[in-house]
Length: 260
Image 1 (spheres, helix red, strand yellow):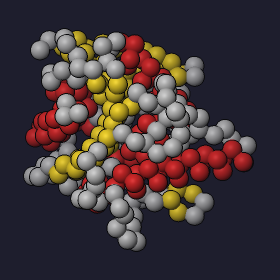
Image 2: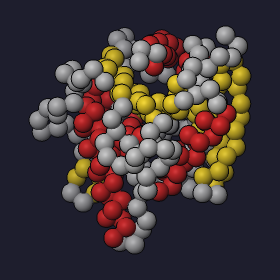
Image 3: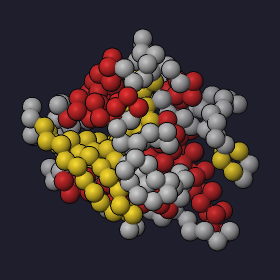
C-alpha cells in the first residue's frame, strides 16, 4: 500500500508544535495518535515510533506523532502532566490529525509509560477517542496531596488495570483543582464533540514487553478485565526498541483496531 508522510506545524495556545502524519492510500476510519511519554519525542528512542507508525500505516491505519511543547522541535517550555498546556497540546494535535485525514471518523491514542494517565484524562473528554493503546504503562498511585513519581505496588489487587488508570487520571484532576485553589487554572475538558468529564468508557489495549516492572504489573491486572479491554504480553522482547518488539506491537495494535 502506498503511503504519504506529511510534516506538520500547528499551534497550541500560540505555541508552535511539530508533528508527522503517515497517511495510507486508503486509510481506515479509525486512526492512531501517538502521545510520547516524558522521556521521548515524536521519533521515540531508537526511532521506535517512526518505524511503528510506518508499519501501522502499511496496514491502512493513519498515524500521527508529535512533539509536545518543550520536546523535540516544538516550541515552549515542557508542560507537566495534568496541567492545561499538556491537555491543550493533545487537543491541538487531534484537531490537526482529523483535518489531514478527513476519511477518519475516530481515533485511538497510543501512550507509552507515564503518558498513559494523561491519555486517559484527555480521552474522557473527547468523544472522538474510541480507545487507548498503552505500552508498558506506568500507573503510579496518588500520595497525600501530591502525585508520586514512582510506580508502587498496590496494597491489594485492583479490579482492573483500566480502573486503576482512570483513578490515576482522577488524581490528576484533583491535583489541578488544588492548583486552582492556589491560583492556577484547572485542566478544562478538551477536544471534540461529546460529553466531557467522567471516566473513559472506550476500549483499552495494554501491551507489556515484560521489560518494565510497572508496565508488567499494570497489564497483569487485566487478567479478569471485561471484553472492552485486552491484555497482550509480548514474550522474548527484552529490548522494547527492537524490530521484533515493533512488529509485535504493530500486529497487536492493528488486530485490535480492526476487531471492533
